[in-house]
Image (cartoon, rainbow over the protein chains, first blue to last red):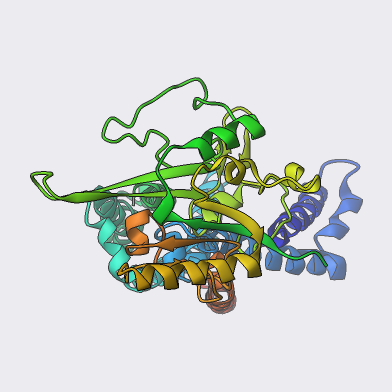
Length: 201
Length: 244
């Protein structure tokens, strides 16, 4: 399973190259030539390869946990895909929060919210499939951990942000950051529940 | 290639003296307490309780008594790493083995800070000695030797017990039905679960292929969502609906 270590190292290298390229794009004096790492054929190659490695890493942690003999983790093959879809959703939420700090254009914000909405719906479907695939083992969640999963992940992390964006209950400026923050909280609780409930099972 | 060696533990002659545990700890210089904490189980004479980083042998006491303790029996079994035939022997210190072990044998030694388990007394084997636990066992409940020879002896012992009316006796892990074979196998007289052994242990790698495939499918779906939304964004930009 050392393939994950190699993927992490390579992802780090590509992420660093993209960071250096972004410095070039920032317009600081003397750094302009570095923009080649973000644009043109080389920039596209770095972006695509780094993105593919990012996908690999997002699912790898779940697969790594599934390849054990721990309760819950090893009782389903869907942990990797759940972590991957959740990671994509909370990445979009993190981009929304970071973008708001830097004055993101309205069309980019609505685009990120739309993609995050679809990803949250996908996450909800995968989460349901995940619980069903556990079979009788899912009974360990008929306690506090299960309540935390339903309230913290399904309600706070998925349904509430979707409802906030759809119904716009909050004042305009507050909707986007509140929903994004709730998605991040839900993603964190999802990992806490899955990691710690295996210990108590 | 050298003949594979292993343990055969005949639980019917184990008297629970724990000489194997003591011999193992002495030879391998394992600490007697868990990081300085000397704790008692409080509910059994079995204060070792489990195999872990500092207990590479564990004599399990199973107390089977009725409610008024008028009728019952003790079962005793010296447990050890099963030395799975198809286990990986490459250690890079990642500790993944602790969660992956189908028998829950491996744990952290608080003194060394590393994951440790029975080594079959590899250093003793190098000079032709049997492992310390087998050497110390006064009833020869623990036998060490070439696996084929041990299996022959074990099957003979089961037949002998059956002849004497102990028809519940059977071997656990002597053939390929359990994880392709165990190099440490047992003669038991009750279900494996009674001895704290899994009835159907599973290889951790069983999930690797399906979990990878589902993750790949998830990546495709996430990628598709991304591509579709990119397309939508471009259409929005072209339509000029968002002040682009």
